[in-house]
Image (spheres, one colour):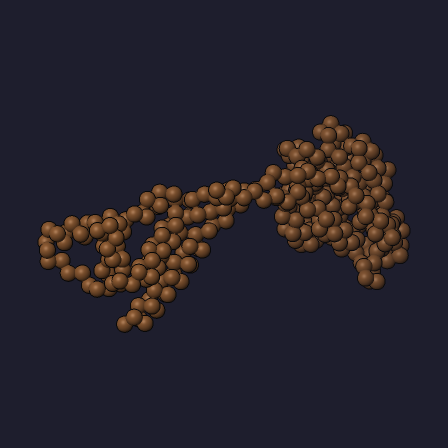
Length: 325
């Protein structure tokens, strides 16, 4: 027996002897009535005193029709092959991208494809590239400005998270920078996670200027919960594209570095396009381990094969009958 082979409806195999039973019943009725007339096209050939052939003495066609019957019963029984198939590896890791959506993210101090670009667009590109390399991770998206909001719950559907990322715009939840609240919401989501590894990647370009939760208290909570936080400080303090009348919020790289250190994570400073390229490589190296996932049992239905062969033999029998006529 082939390993993994079985029938979905094995009781259907009990129908195999039905033609023999029908033949005996027809024979009994013929003896009782003695007036039974059977068309020549369905006369059974005599085997052990029972009429079981078809189409007169044409034994080859009788064999074909018996084979059709057996194949039809076999198809009804639902033959199937159930085999284990290795599933995609999973990391056992849940990640939250916590991204700054404050007004300062409109500043243009980076370039993409040689064009001066807003920081928010750079963030979207960073996030999208990171997501494409996270196969096996569950990733969620938190945005924060005056207050935080969950843009995408943790999921293996990374394309859906990328879509949510590309659809966010500055001003959706204000223009301030509530780093503590953004981190706090991320920790609240991961607190319910049963993953063996829980990670927050926090990106901001300013200091904590809003929100009810301080960045320091959120960092202490991350350490208590055993959630690792990697922080990214984006942009520079000076911006040639901003007039002297505009005061940009100062960056607080020290706070972000302290958050990362307290939780066992790493901190990054991104000021140039070269830094961006290095960041992409560094993020890919973070938390790279994966574990083998349990194999998945895949069912392959085999009934179309006997059913198709039965149909083919029916056509052969029909053709042979017409030739005989």
